[in-house]
Length: 542
Image (cartoon, rainbow, N blue to C red; front, side):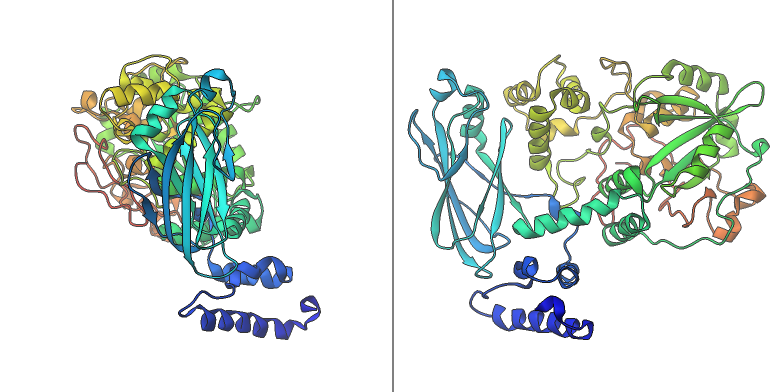
């Protein structure tokens, strides 16, 4: 019947549903909330209501609400549906059972079943509507499970039938089971997933989704540039060490870069650097070049080839050229830069330390609701699903921080506990540029360039006291090492027309790099810097 309504009536129906929701929400619980009935409505009307509920990709991240430990006081929190929630944890003896739902050890055997298990007793009260529900994730470093609750004033139970190993039981005795709330409930989480999909779509729809996400969560403004959107670059005006900042706004890499920007505060998602050889041939060196096998490696590509690929890239890249300051260029050791680049050529992208350049502090680098508890839960999940991936992404780096070798994630957590450290503290230990991983030195796109700068003498006299693997893309373009006199910029870069302090050489939208070229290098730079959105405030000399 609703689908047959004339279009002019549908906004009125939307208004009536919203009004009914407002009238009924006061005092007692409402029979339903607008978002509770979305599946029952015609698709177009449901999408209109979905937009009004303001779900976004961020709502896919669960929020840490409590750690429930055996013998401890009841944990309490406010949920998305139920305003009053309490939970206690009781250990069970082998063979007993006390839960409606639950999870067993991955390889249940006599050893693990002899350890017993546990039951979480959770009481919910004061729902915001009759039809809402709360969706939870329960996690230890050894498992992740989930459940949902709809009924109020009931004692719900969630059972862990058997521990994975004795170490899991000991961990839970000391730290409890982490409880995470999906902030938008079951339906909101599904709608948020729908909101994420467009970020990775290589269409105008995907581009609009990425721009909207960055505007909402980072305050980014996107001003259209006047044509032409690409510059006619003269090789004579480009020098070794000149920096390239790239920003993709749709497609697979556009979606990943959007999320990376939001997490780190960078207004660019990839970087590369120019090198000019003794014959005057211009090259682009970068970490993260995708070869024909699909592997991301460190490469050196002739400029004409690289620029041709950029012009054909259907992800609509925005590219800025950041020339080095003449004083910095004067001390740039070109032969040392080439030597470093050649020594790294063909090595894999720096996945080992990618996340550690971002995490510097105990709590001030995480965009809400992300925190160290959720990071450990995600690591645990990926360790179980993709052990090789987990080893590449963080296990080796965590071992470096402990001075150990070949410990898996569970071993790392156990060793961290023995040393009286929290996992959160372990994540904040600074990366060292001289650490060698199983496949050599590990450099992300920006760490590769800054390592080249370091070898070329750009950071003198702080060369030995700066760890460039601690830098994000934002940290790099904030360095006061770039040209600061607009009159010295090449005429073809349209800096005056764009009113930018650098050359934007490609892109439909004007690139914004806040605090560009403002911070002089100093010892131990960027080893303890917060970066929480939406302001990403950075104290001096952190």
